[in-house]
Length: 302
Image (cartoon, rainbow, N blue to C red):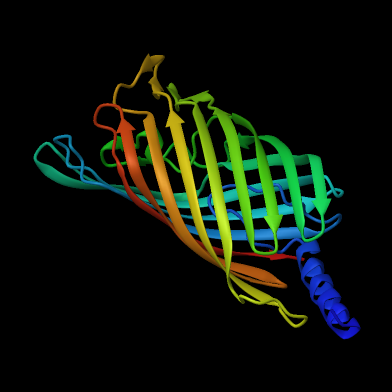
């Protein structure tokens, strides 16, 4: 190999690794990653989510649509520790039949906010690749309205913007990143609190994401943007909700989602979109099944 070729190759690698080092990379769409936020830097993520539910098997013929905007701001304390705050806004609409009449029940507003920290406790870097494991934990504060009332009375708790309860969650996330692809996985558990005589079911989930660089196929010194194909799987298990201390037999269960998506990554931002499609839904009683969840948004480091 000639000296000129070696120099060009070195420039290409240095350029791409400089891109990687600033923290704007392909990433999981439906969950967290272990990639760091640089010290004294911020990352902002905005996600629009549209969730549609299948036809209701119960006599009420419920038709539920949930739209949301989730705003996340992260701050790097140092190379290992980052803090995050997430604030959602929900628009929920439920059409149903009761007493031989059609009713629409809806609510919109700011939901419950999450605050959590993520700490990288294992990091192994090699040329053009990195492997990291991080732990995270935090709480959900009852910042949303949990007391909405309409003509039928107080809205059921799952339809309220907020829960009125404090929740706590923790987990571990792993990221393996190369120049061609990235793998992320996560295990997490959420302990739900009690408020208004309602206790949502605790939630355990396992997630995995694979992102593969589709374009450009060949890297060069002036490569500044990337197109990634994304495929994720999410398995979520939720225990029964409890009403006044009694298990609700029409709540909880296990769902497995497959999530194809796409990401456009530049030096400054990421654009992304994905669709979560349930392939297995083993729910309890007449709990509503999900038809699909569409997610799109962007993230920016600054």
